[in-house]
Picture: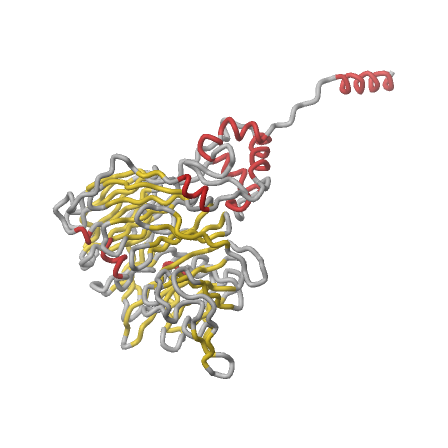
Length: 516
């Protein structure tokens, strides 16, 4: 009897229709493609391919699909999709694509210039155009333009999705260029309070740099492995570099900076142990690939091959360096290797490493700031994984002090007009604290907690240093305006997920206390 029942059950099971497995591609097309594009290369939302997801994979990726992503427009799908459907979508977007082509023709083809834009002959507002501050509102992809004198909002305009890397201003302060993670570059005229146009310079991008002569904009790309140089006037392509190391290995570009004293862009390469310099002038001077450097015998040796506009120079380093901080004259840079607990100092004149530094806890060199202290130039660097700030003497590269804070911080800011360094606590139990540190004694003078438990971060100063602006980095957030002398709060400006703030004067002059 038992055998007959088992046989009948087995036959019934074999006869029943198979349970259909969730189709990640179909779900993606239905729910995701409107933001991330059918190609998965990004639209309003970022590209969803392995190269852009990075470490976001497996259970972490499924959790983002289920719960959404804080401070972005990414919704939660846990009430829409079953766990197995979420897993199917996660698996689908982790599937590699054929290497996408995004070169000169594709970039120029994406360019759109605003037909309704008419440049003003003078600012359309009466306040100091050099004291304008831009506030990036990540919550709904907008930027607010603040009058630095009255701190009123002059304009609020839409940006590409997921602005990243900090806006860059033209040397006269009139234009600002904004980049998103999915490679869109937007040009905005501050005098006219109007967008000029935009172009997609890459598919997954890291940051931008403006040449000091205002002619060119360099875009560092993860995907494809390129450096795109745009003509700042009309956002057309001036040059696209395929980024490969000496041995032919392709590399992502972690960051690009301008070195105005050298007439070059300086690149951090993610995957090969090299630094690149690319000229943005036609001068046949020393800062081209024909740069003169000292060999092991101390003799100067000319390497010259290329010279002039967009000449490239390579500098070998001991390991790939993710991020840089520069000395004021741009002769030296500090680079961090994310796989080690050290930083290195590279002298760009001689083209080699000259010192190493103890920098544990993932230093955030892009937020480093420097100032003169007791006759020495020092640089302060926050650590993303530790509650500490390293202060380093830039003459002999010795560690002056490690300032202990209540948690890992992300941003540092100061100003020549204030005696204090402002350091946030971005994560951890004490998230939301702002440490006010004496720049002479290097002691914590005061801790501000304007909104306990909420992310309070990224300080910027008005041109004169009288006011400090701090973000409550939440969807229902605000920019808090402090009296920078008394540390008293004087005003709150409601904002939607405000993150970075950028004052025109401080950025174009690299005011003491402003990061590069």
